[in-house]
Each structure stands twice: as structure tokens, then as C-alpha cells.
Amino acid sequence: MYRGTKFERGGRALFRVRVRGWPADRAGDGFRPPAVIDNAVTDNAVTGMGYGMSGLGKRFLGLGACALAAGLPALAVAQDAAAPAAAAAAPTISGGDTAWMLMSTALVLMMTIPGLALFYGGMVRKFNVLAMVMQSFTITCLVTVIWALVGYSLSFTAASDAADAKEFIGGFSRVLLAGMDPTGTHALAPTIPEPVFMMYQMTFAIITPALITGAFADRMKFSSMLVFITLWSLLVYAPVAHTVWHPNGFMAKLGVLDFAGGTVVHINAGIAGLVACLVIGKRKGYPNADFSPHNLVLSLIGASLLWVGWFGFNAGSALTAGPRAGMAMTVTQVATGAAALAWVFVEWALKGKPSVLGIISGAVAGLVAITPAAGFVDTVGAFAIGIAAGVICFFTATSMKRALGYDDSLDAFGVHGIGGIVGAILTGVFAKMSIANSEGAFAATLKDAPDTKLGLIEGNVGQVLTQLEGVAFTVVWCAVITFILLKIIDLVIGLRVDEDIERDGLDIALHGESIH
Image (cartoon, rainbow, N blue to C red):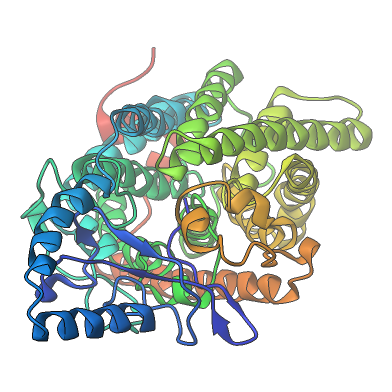
């Protein structure tokens, strides 16, 4: 998904987006009728959804004034005739795009329930399975409510009408989804109804905190988890999503490339998971006790559902059913296969046997790493990103975890945090303008500058530095706020279950149920 990134050459912005025929009091809030894209090169910084008139427009205005002063009534007739034509030429809601995004929404929701629930559920011990799947299902319900109440508004509306705003958090114009018109659109998705866009983004907000639960599996109170996820969704996820994906967000203005959630979803969740497992502490008996997965068949089924659902995650982030979605799907498949094989071959070489847990972990690492890059790289870049993610995440989830002694139970940090960082940085290396410019915002706004360089492979060293800035901000913000939230919750109601509950299992103690 191209989300309002600024592109410059020689200090000159390459494009600006302007909305015409929209009330001044709604400028910049992200909600609009179909937009008109002005691809003129300008000396000013990107203005997002702001107003302005090009020099050519001013000259036409001057000519029109002279014509009226000269008493040429035909001008008024021409204007009346031109209005319907302009309206007809403006983009409208596409049935094809809408159908694709409805399907993508369902696919991404499937990633959490049942995909992630089964993936995590199969990895824990048999007396904690229900507690694990209960967390994924409950988070789906909880974040749905949070998103409808205020999360969507904080993430995808503008807090300021200023054209040069560099925002950290959104506004309140969509609290309780107020004012949402089923025939209206959002600035980021002008060919699908806004309710569809809202629902699609909701599924991202759902899976992100659900990923964190893998880091503190087997030992966190259910009540504490609910409080933590609620606060984290509002204070960590929403600000990062707004800064990266809303046109007014400061990381979007900076130029950070994140097609489908390398920073917003995976680095965010992975860093939160690392902080959580450090604050809560190790499982009793770790690392000497037997923490073997109780049912890897469940995990394999869950990983398979994640893989299929990820096509909605990555290809759906194009927000259209077009060439960019097709390419995103292709590189997603390539990177996933490459990462899975890289992980399992390294494991085979070092441990003597390839494992089911290894190949599915490698596949997820590849899916994570290609997420920020899916709309910017070709298959060569996908191979490189997948192989790098498979190898690096393997050593992070095994050797580094043992060396540092932290108990990231299901490798939320090792796979999602590290995989997201690898993918975000390598996006800056392998991004190609020919891929990014295949359709949508890039095609409309950069056609006057087809030689623009995007990634390091094309000669743009600065993009790698920009990606590093995006990674650094996400890591620091997420780590600090997550730590503060967990410490406060621990002080007020406690984070960890009692030792006897942890020993006997959470299923019976917390939920009064058992898989047997």
C-alpha cells in the first residue's frame, strides 16, 4: 500500500496531491470525494491533502477574469457544460476493487482466527492450549470494539488541516465511526467505500497485538492481558499507524516505505513481545524444563492459513485489484518459499535434521520480511529478502535467545521483530521505481519523473537511511510505552499468574476448561 510518502530530487518535491471541490473545513482530514491528482513538479515540500493552485491554474483564472470583464457570456455556458464532464471523469467506486478488498479483509481476519490461534496453540504445552487460542479470539473481539470506538479515527483521520502538518496521532472526526458514508471514500483508497477500507485496516489492528501474546505464553493473567492490549492498541499501534500510513504522518512525510506493515505491525509487535517477556520474566523451569510443542499439526495448519491469508495482507495493501496487487502476491510467495528453505537448510546443517517447526517458522519469517517491501521490489529482491530473513531469524530465535537468556516463548521477537527490521531495511535496498510506479499514486504522480531513483539498488543511498530512521522510531516508541504500560499494570493488578497455576496449566485455572 503506498501511504503518502514524500519523494524529492535535488531538494525539489516531485509531486503533490490536491483535492478540488471539497469544503475548506474538511481539508486534510483524509475523507473526500474522488480526488484529482496534480503531478506537476513543485519547489515546495509535499503538501498531502492540502490546497493550492499551480501557476498554470492561476493563468487560466486570470484569462477567465479578463474574458468575463470583456463580456463573453459563452464562458459561463462553457463552465456549465464542463462541470458534468469533470464529474464524469473523476474516479468512482470500483466494483472490482471493492470485491477484492472485501476478500482481502476476510483473508487477513482469517490470519488471526483461526490462523494465529492454531499456530500458537499447537506450540504450547497441552494444558495451555485453550488459554492461547482464547487470547487470539478475545483480542479479535476487543480490538474490533476499540477500532470502531476510536482506534480508526486516531489512525486514519487528520488532527490538523495544515498542509505541512507532520502529525503523530490522528483526530476524532470518526469516533464511533460517526459520519461514515457507505458511498464515501478515504483519500488512501478512492475506489472502494470507506467502510471497506475501515474494515480492512481493522484486521491489521487485530493481528498486531495478537502476535505479542506469543512472547508471554503460559504465564500472563487473562485480565492483565485485556488491560494491556487495550492500552497498547491506543497508545502504540494507533500512533505508529498514523505516522507511517496517513499522508499527514511525520514518517510518511519523512519518506519511510512500508507497503503493508513491516514497522506498524511486525516491528511493533516484536519489540512489544521482547519487552513483555523481559518484564514478566521467564517461565518456571526455563530453559531446562521440557517446553516442546504439544501438537505441531495444529501449528502447521495455522502456518498454512497464515500463508494464504498473507496474500490479503500484502496484495490487498495495494487497495486495488491491479498490477501492483499481482506483483505483491508474487513476491510474497517467492520470499516465503526462499525463507522457509533457508531456515530449514541451516537447521539441517547445524542440527542434523530438518524439522516441521523449523520450516513453518522460516515461512512466517519470510512472510514478515516481505511485508514492507511487497509493493516496491521485484522477484530478485524477494529472493534476497527471503533468504536473509530465514537465516537471520533462525539465529535470533536459537543462538541469540540462548546467549542472552530471555524467554520469548514462541519467538514473537525472533520472527516478527527481527524479520520486520530485516524487511524494512532491505526495502530501502531493493525498492525499484518500476515496481512502485506500476499504478495508483506513483503512476499518477511520478510520471513526469520516470528516472527517479527509489532504492539503493537504483543508486538512492538516502532511502536506506530513511528506513533506518523509521525502524529506530518504531523500536524506541514501542519499547518505552510498552515498558511503562506493563509496569503500571503489574503495580496495580499484577501481570503474572501464581506459580501453582503456571505449573498446573492456565486452561483449567483461568477458564475452567480442558482440551481433553
